Length: 175
Image 1 (tube, one colour):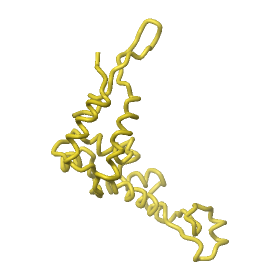
Image 2 (image 1 turned 60 degrees about the vertical axis):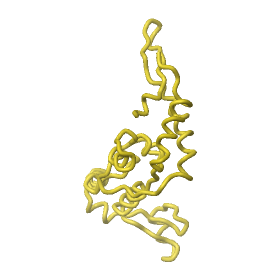
Image 3 (image 1 turned 180 degrees about the vertical axis):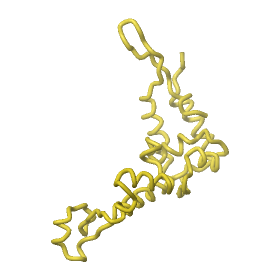
Image 4 (image 1 turned 45 degrees about the vertical axis):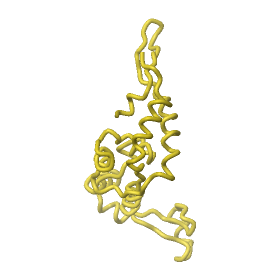
C-alpha cells in the first residue's frame, strides 16, 4: 500500500481562474501521530546494514517494499539523503566533499567540554585533560551516521491493524 493512497486530494488555487488537484500533505500530521503511538511499545530495535535502504528493510520484515514509508515515518526520517544512514562509500564521498578530503577530516577536530558541549580551541586549551575531549571531523561524521543506523521496526503482526486503522481514520473520499 502506498502511503499516498491515504492522502485526500484538494483543489489548490493557482490563480483566480486555475486550480490544481494536489495531495493534501497536512494529512501527514494525522498519520505521524497515529503511527507514533505504536513506536515505543510495539517495535523492535534494528541496525541498518551498510547501504541498506528503507524499501529493502520493508521487504525483509513485511514481505513487500511498500512499507518503506512506515520504516521512515517511525524513525523520523523526512529526507532519505539527510536523515537515513549513508553507506560507507557515500559517507566517505560526503566527508571528502564537505571537508576537502577524508585526510583533512581526520586531522581536523571538534572540541568538547566535560558536559559534551562543543567549544572552541581556545576554551579547550584552558581546560584540564579530564574536563575536555575531542574527536576528528571524520569521527564526528561517522558517529552521526552510526546513530542514524539504530532504528525501530514496527512488528510485522501489527501491519494489518495499522492498514485498517489508517484507512478508516485518515482517508477522506477522493473526488
